[in-house]
Length: 210
Image (cartoon, rainbow, N blue to C red; front, side, top):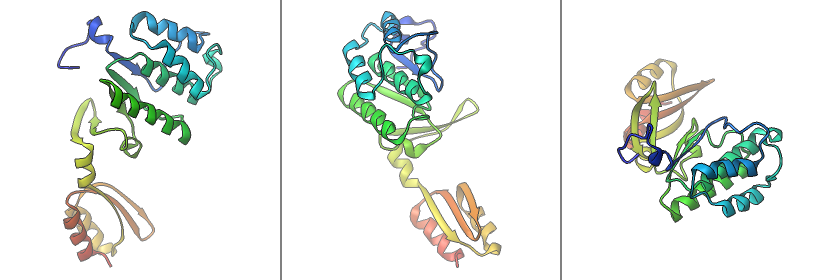
């Protein structure tokens, strides 16, 4: 964060909120009790917004969180993270467990925060399509390292999905020539995710496809 080490740095840690895939809540706690707990550390916590978002998502402030579904717990963790008013929000599989309506609602909240204040969500997800309308930068992590980091728009221009029918004897040569990210075969149909220039990919396909 801003080139600083946040380990044992209370001031820097107060600028970060982490939403895990399975968020921890105090035993037998309610949303209101968790809000009061986080307010101890996050001094800029927006209590009024918290109640507004609880109502918007239909969550009861005094209901035991242990009785919530996975999706409801995920919604609560997002609300707590947003209302903590930190600069950075670290999210692990934020949309997992949410139905399509709630996913759009969470995306809308993220987009509004990005527009209205100094706010940077860092979202880990296995579904890139889920993020393309709210994220402007993407990176691929592998074994503790970053394989690549690119602007979302630049990446969209260089990654293409293709469906084609290719003669069996030509298939291997075609796959060898392309910068392949993913291949899938369904009968005679070949489905490819390819990195490269669109025109060059089309030219190679036209030479090989029947």
